[in-house]
Length: 71
Image (cartoon, rainbow, N blue to C red; front, side, top):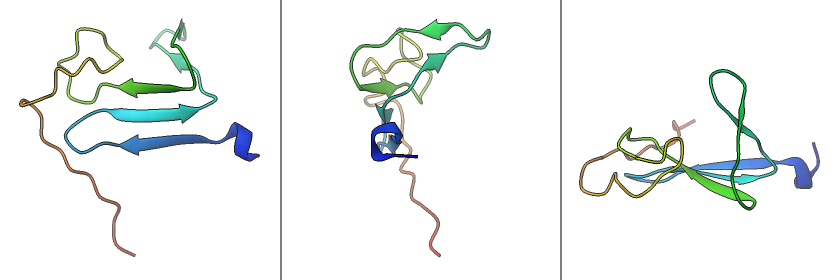
C-alpha cells in the first residue's frame, strides 16, 4: 500500500475518531455516506445529531482516553 492510499485514524481524547486519507464511509446497508475533503470526524459518543459525523455534542458528556497497549 502506497502512502497515497494509507488511511490514518486518530482516536481523540474525549471526542471523535479523526479519519484522514482516501476512504469511503458506508452505512449498514452498504450505501455510501458522502463526506467533504480528505478527512472526517466520526462520532464515538452517540450524542451527535449528524451521525456518523461528530458535531461536538460529546463536550462535557463523554469521557474516554484511549491509549495503545504497552509492548
